[in-house]
Amino acid sequence: MMKLKKIATFLIATCTLLMSVAAEEKSVTNGVAWTDANGNVIQAHDTVVKYGSKYYWYGLDYSQEAAVGDGTGFMAVKCYESEDLVNWTWKSDVLTKQTDDRFYGMGNVFFPQVVYNKSTKMFVMWMGTSNGPLVAVSDKPYGNFHIHDTYVTTSSGSIINSVFVDDDGAAYLSAYVWEDLAVDAPKLYVYRLTDDYLEIRKEWNSWGDIYSISFDNRAIGRSKIIKHKGVYYLIFADYGSLISVASKLEYTGLTWYDFVGGSYTYQGVKWAYANSLYDEWSGVNSFENTSTSYEFSTLIAVQGEEGTSYIASFNGWNSSDMSNSTYTWQPLQWDDSKFSNMDVPYIGDYSSIVIDAKKGTVKGN
Image (cartoon, rainbow, N blue to C red; front, side):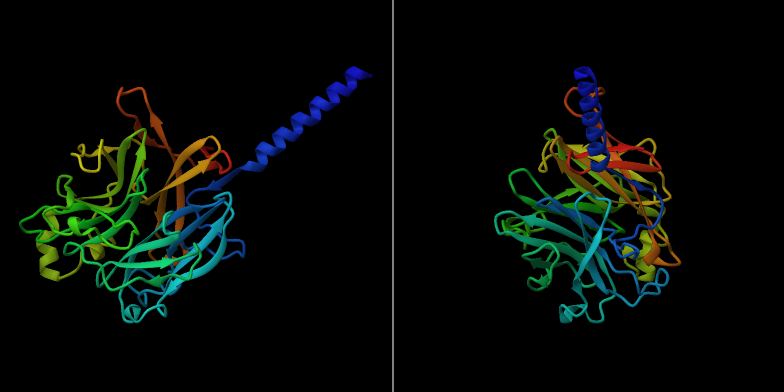
């Protein structure tokens, strides 16, 4: 009888453990439009921030965008909340065209990027616009955000890409910049931000002092810097050489962003590395198995009890209905067998992935 009780206790404990593991592990299906708790299609193609035990996902509202080029301009930045990175609840439109007079008549807002400043306890949003970069702030992740000040001055023709916060709390803004494509190669510029993350530091605001990265004249779309085992990695969407289209840009007067949707050819996601943000960067490296059918968006840090994993997020744009675009998330993993001084990143290729937000793990399914 005692033996049967022990067996029963063991079976109950085993089942409880398996149920607990199953409860923490959640899967997402790639290549489809995802919906929130109310059944509405999620529109959040830009950035994810963790605050406390919850994640906040931000993106532009494309509900008025029947097709590429048919939209009514900037509508809103939407925010969704989740504890497991799978089940999302719409929280609010954290920034709308009614927020500030500068949004009226504005054609586009690009790549809203949100970071949390632990010192000021404020959420800071950097975004590109048709008239130059803007900064907005909020004391809550779900808004409302308000415009901090006037337009931030960066080098001419810049498109905001992403914001990176280093281990010491210092923040860096990356922006893709061209000045005169007929004579100068385009560059990705890295700007050191002030301690409150609201402005570019003055000593970094003279164009000769800003650190710039040039990758064989490539046009860079969305990008993200992360730090892994002391090495900095830049992951970016590659649109190929600009040399062949420089004259067309000058002739038509169209901006670089307009061409991303039409004339450049997306060539997949690439990566480079450096030992310091003030150092030389490596050459361009390719991932072996990434598709060009969806565009790289960002990297999502999944922070849990067992460490931090990364998700490479991709957007599958629906050109006939932008609000019904799709998502693909793949695990960003590391190979430590090739070099002694650094790991080599690689991106999975799975129809779905399994996320355990509590542990901080991501795996293909």
